[in-house]
Image (cartoon, rainbow, N blue to C red):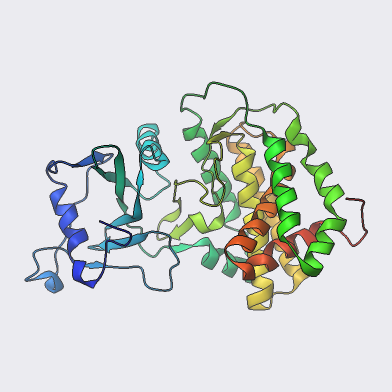
Length: 359
């Protein structure tokens, strides 16, 4: 299995894999199981193939890896290319199952292969959630209709996730250098953001640095295993509610510490609401004032639900992590997706007025 193991000629491979998981695979393959696989149904379209019907998610879905739906009940995510172990997802899947956390696609199995020197993660097998859409669809719709009914369930989901992850053994060693990393992100954002946006950003760098300062003081709350990439795009709304997915970590941040204050996840979630508002303004014609009011309400309801459900949060860290996140969004735009710059710049312009500060 190489860079892209699935083409038309491989049709049936994914369903055949699921059938093979009923027994132990031959070396050099191995399977780690988390929960029993469901029984797959076979329809008329499957006759003559010997395997259940499979399909992709469609070309419109932008995914780093390649996911296949089998029999409308299981999703196999092929990692393209396979990645060496240790990888965060299998360990988190196992822990979430043990902790009884169910607000995710049910984790079933991880397929690995040994190359004689290391073990590679080939695929992750989870449940399929019917009628699911990700937050870049349903949340933008909510902004356009001024609907914040999702915010309280999302706050509870984040609280339940953190409560489950907090029972993982805490790490040894010193706290990660949060302020140093945040200041580095600001410096890089300033360096890669050119033109009028860059001049605007430079004029406000002093205020941004001041807002990062709390990251240099000892946190009053715990460090826990965080999701690490918790934005609305990782929240599916499906037939029975909401589910968080993708525990691979943040692919755009090298060497991110897996154990951090829970405020890191919360700040990324709240800034993603800000990005949703910018998307609604740019692509749907939502009035900026209406979008800003929606963000304020949604943010307040989400954080209230979170703090009412668990006591892990140090609220003083939310704002500095939010500022750092917008810097990282600018870096991401410069490196990978230039057209995305409008979103973090739009957020920053709502936070800082036109008065210039010394950098």
